[in-house]
Amino acid sequence: MSRGAKGLIASGTVAIVVLGGVLVGIVRTPDQAPTLEEAHAAVEESLERVRATFPADAVVDAVSEVTEQPCPVEGGGVIVERHESFALDHALVIRAWDEEFAEAFPEADGWYVTAGQGSEDDSPLDLTIVGRDLSVVNVRVIVDGDATTVEMTTTSQCAPMPTTTPTPSGG
Image 1 (spheres, one colour):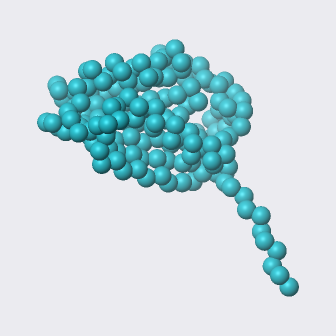
Image 2: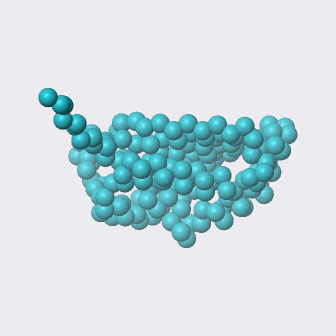
Image 3: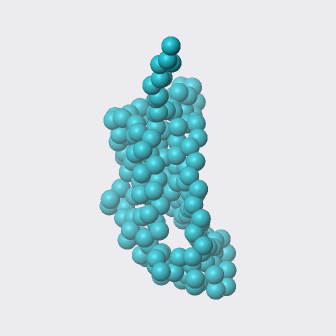
């Protein structure tokens, strides 16, 4: 973000989102930053919503990693980032799953989804999902023969650094 734009989208403001000259949406940022606990819950909720579009009994070899990193905005606290990957025990028919996925993230509810596809067989399928709260989830679905791998990453909004109260030393 350029110096002149720093702080342009502050909490409680309205932003008009334009991509490639096309109005994508109008969003209102929250009035206050989430707590660290709320940031953890938000990333879990985002991934759970994506995960729910796959048949739960078909998910195998799930791996998840959560990290806290410095917010890229100066003095912004921390962000929570979650990476998750899993395999499905069968080849996913992307075109059929795509319809179910679209129903889970309707534009009418403030979701904005972009998709990029690799080769003719639609694999890999790369999705970027942006929520009304500007949360972003990146999803990659890879179908290779009879196997399907799903990789997901989401990052929270900046949360204030938790403060600790110093313990008085005895003496």
